[in-house]
Length: 536
Image (cartoon, rainbow, N blue to C red; front, top):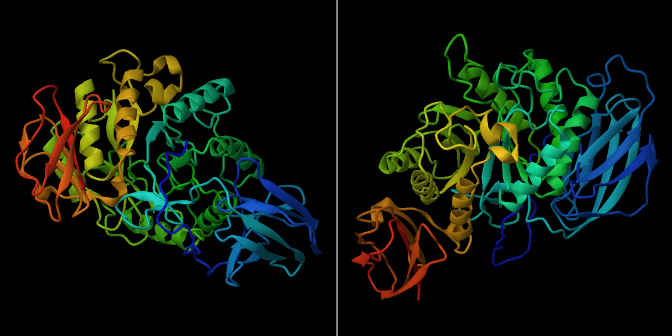
């Protein structure tokens, strides 16, 4: 579910900065999608209300015979905003004689659209009214502090991510097991799922092999509909999605011809692009990892760069995009087509090494998805974390302004080890989970949502010990893994002091006030502590 949303002082929502250099397809994704069907060359005057950031859909009939309806003709749609500006998009062939267009409106008020086929045939015109919805906005880079994720329109929120394995979209995973997992994930406070074998199956033993996931290439509308039935269920629950494999994933049967690659990307975005709750990924996991014969290079960096540019050129709604990294530094840190970093590691229990590695790879104008860094019970380079280490690593990740993605591998028994497709994250069987570790993370995320964390940035230069987030002159948060005393450089005091027990954040102690932040000493009891300073 979406975490508590904090809106900026102004509630007005400006038009999103979309790429409008393309032809059009549209979508309004909402818990109950609203759609209309238009015969070719028809206009509808039927008025529909579509929630802002939700999905509008219209369908069109075209009985012209084509050798390949996916490639021989394009449904071009132009949408006109209430302010008179336009967005060009494209629709998609959905089997038989049916074409559809999906769109996500970003402005309140009356919208108009005109649809035409590229072979000259008219499709239809229409209109709808965009009204307020219960969505916070499209998942995006935070508009006031780009170190964090947020939502289009200025709302703030915290990413609470969980990795799930290759079985999630598979037809041979019992539907009731998927439903039970989703019910649990929402109740646990998770709001983003990192999903393996998505978009394409990771066809490797112990990974996607044997799981009947939708086969999206070659293009097949029925297979996309099979995938969308599950995506729509996730969306109804207001959960968000990160495709772990991305468009061109490891061990996936993706197109290799450039023309086919563009067709595949365009078609996928035409079907999914109007969803408010998605992130984009060029390739994963770790496409630059080259360990023959079991983990060969997926694509060279030059090809990833080309494909990244292609996807961004078609990314009309501006969904944040990334590439998954191999263990180590971010190979794409400064690439313009990458909107947020996706890091694997540092895989360590040394908190200083963890902090330094995260801060080194956190671009000053991009969020950081700490994707494969704290995976409990994972045998691929991860320590066998204790509960204390899970807690302390999680705090340091958040103190680095990182969006944490947790994985529960290895099984329910302490000490059991596996990979990203094993344990609870791999099976989605609730009996395999280490519930107590999910509870640790929930406690930490719950506390962060009690403060305006999104206004702060990492500031290690301000503290003599521990780890610091700061909004200079307004608020400071320091994490002390072993308690003790810290000198914090502040400005514009005085500040009210609150001590928070990091093992039980419900225990909070009034520490009085300080004018300069010097000699702040944690309570003698407990182990690790947070201290929060707020302008008095």
